[in-house]
Image 1: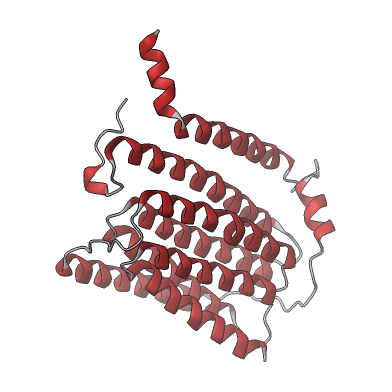
Image 2: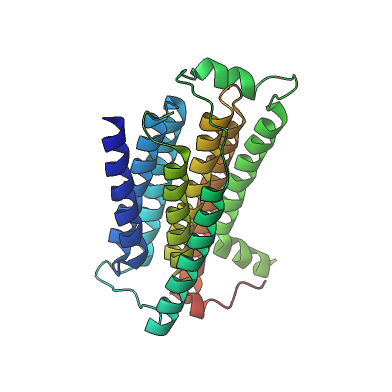
Length: 173
Length: 105
């Protein structure tokens, strides 16, 4: 049963990812990306990391996609078709990507992974105490750094977003 | 771990997603499309962290933490990129890569 679900998810994700990078309508491309991200959340559910799946759904599907859709609607005319790269460039890139994929797969399949059989569920309490622990293997410092990073990104986005007015003010001074 | 699915199949899936992202990153000529391709690449690597954590080292949680950090950095990056794109559109009325030459202050 889980096998069938995984194959369906994988097929959907690959099809929608290809559609997302080749579609000529901007908004459709973003919506295809949304399906890929939901499929990734499904993979997280399948390997029993429910918290990560919830984060994926809220931040990616709820936050980033909405942000990108807003910027598409503000920036593009909705009927506009994107210009494509030259056919020769597309074919060359496709061949290079297939070659790189071949190298990746050859490396992965030639390595012998020591898989440990386990079916235990990770609870949110485990993740929280791991993130906030001071001991060996604790992640308190990166956690604080990431909060500073989010604050800096927020301030930076505000300043860049209204950059025009700020520069005008500078000229009057 | 997923019953009946080996680690090789999931790593194959993430490699395919990663290279689809690379393909889009190189062939697209629009800043927002490039942002979408970057999201694909970041997500593929986040799944890799989680899967290797679950299949090979189930007693620790490092892969989950790294994937949380990847998601946070991706969110910050997207917010900044959208701010830059909108500001750029105000100044040159275009988001094509070939028109973008005024980012030097």
